[in-house]
Image 1 (cartoon, helix red, strand yellow):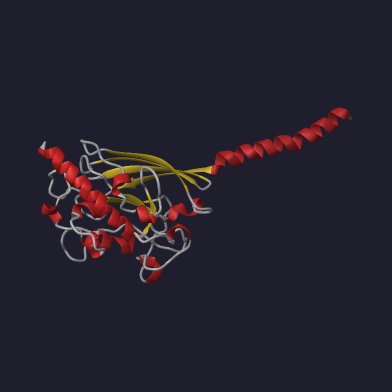
Image 2 (tube, rainbow, N blue to C red):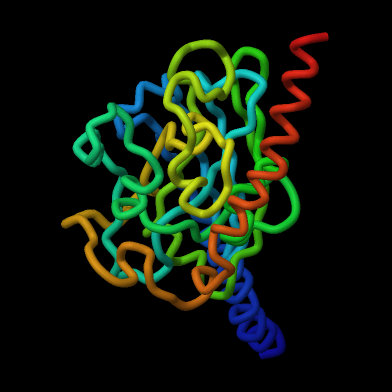
Length: 263
């Protein structure tokens, strides 16, 4: 009798332990993404991104090659945490002005606004979208490496599959730096009142969908094109503040680089 009682008491405890173990094993989700130049911008860049989700903690691991050497590259999650959204990576047909490049203004209606900035440290909200001094920098061979764990808002981890990663910055004229000679001045930065930023520095270089991302018809109007306010991370300070930061930090970085080249 005593032994039977002990077994009866032990059984629920064992089941609870097994359930906890199974739940823990299933807690992590992992996605592997290929980031390529879907835009036809001739960036020469490719990356592989591995995303590991543990509840609302996200670990992002990116390995890339073919980037502008010794140069920072802004990178973000774009899209929406609202499951109804239908964002996707743009193709060459989004080059509306026929200049051979899909720039930021032409890409945003397809892939959506910034919802997470993949900075190396500090803030990861949209306001750090162009915090160039905190973005990963390619090495002398154009290789880019990034790893960071980010705490997401409650419930956002389950909706991550609706997003895209976009990496910016390309070397259109093959001189291993961002300059005005190839594509001129960034129309995106200029539209926000920041002058002197090369288009090469802001144009998208790669794009990739998170596994099981929503696909379908191109978004149109209102929030779908990033012009309205939404809940959670998207209701943040406009990316224009980030461009202002890019104007200050980017120009300082370009001056430092020019000084180094001259020396």
